[in-house]
Length: 205
Image 1 (cartoon, rainbow, N blue to C red):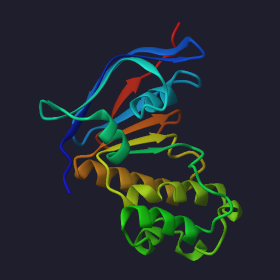
Image 2 (cartoon, one colour):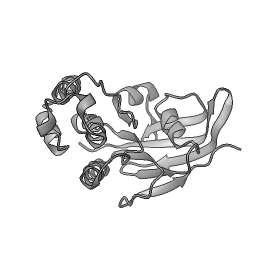
Image 3 (cartoon, rainbow, N blue to C red):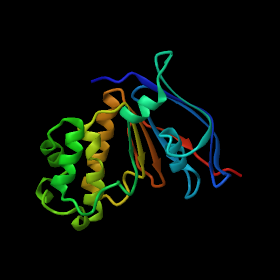
């Protein structure tokens, strides 16, 4: 599957409690682009990801296109976007197998291969609450494997991961790039990602 969608942000300002968190952000991401949002704590990196996903209110324009044709933003956000936060949105009471089964059922896919790729197949009977921090982080990436989407919004994806876990995430990102997908990452640590470009984000004055 090859994606052909582009993403366009024009003068995006995100507010929280009536005050601007980050302002004046513009970028264009073409198919296959990887964009690293870098900045200090509180600079607004996560706020930009949430604005693109429409999980935060914003001013400015967020436009999705195929060629020159604008796409329905509600459809793109619902069916062509993956947003993965540091919390992962996992139910601590479910086992790894149950979590994978739920995600797979929504996508109509077999989760077994995905669990193996994430090195979680041997932890399948453990509850999410029993997993290590790194295992929980890897499990949060399950949806990236099970459901192809044109746009990935990854918030601190390397946090809590060991060397093996980081290699898994880098491989996922590279695979998304090769398919023409777009990846936006909010990062505070130095991570080298081949072919990526950087957008410096600063908190609103």
